[in-house]
Length: 283
DNA sequence: ATGTCGCCCTGGGAGC
DNA sequence: TGCTCCCAGGGCGACA
Image (tube, rainbow, N blue to C red; front, side, top):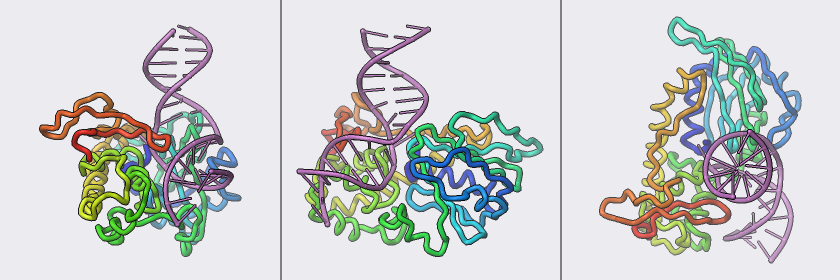
């Protein structure tokens, strides 16, 4: 689930139950996820107030009143399940613990946030907030797609001379933060750019034009995620926000949705990962 | 520096 | 029903 729009959706879902609240209890059920969890993680979280919830790329960042920030990455299968929140006059019960519930946080507002991650590609760490940018997971990440540093001249410059397919270049988190396999495929289709085209062989005009298309693709996805945020709250934290209408992703063999195109969506493999695109209208 | 590949894990679905 | 194989939205580190 977790590319930038999904992580942003998760963040927005967590804000009302975490921001300004105190972590009354932290339960850490194993010593590691993808990497070792920080030393004494439960103690360093317990009693801390969450000052702000932010997002950087695909990371959720919980700034604590201890001067540390909890860094969370959802990997491929990570979930942040919310239970026990107040809904009108009702308060949901906490569900029974599930397999792969690795970290459980009980907040002062009554909510419980459970990090569940079957594949354990996720990660958590605690790091001084003042030097968050220097954390090894965050240090090399490129500009936020909605930030001022991500603009047409930047992207043109960044792609110049690169011999890798544009698909791989946009997947590279050093080029732009937060894009994953789905939204790269979707953005390239919207832009009419072939995923196999070498990044450096895209005209400056077409390379620059990717910037607003990437933003629009992500913004639409966030909006779609936001619309199902209500389900997320109602349904005991069950994360079910994928009513997105993908134009190419997962649509191998289906007709291209571009008006008057008439092409068929193909699936190919690039650097070991599926790419979906229409060879007729993506050039 | 740049680009590709293997790998860390588990679960779900397709096919037999 | 049960097995095997393939696939999965990430990203690091090793290699050419």
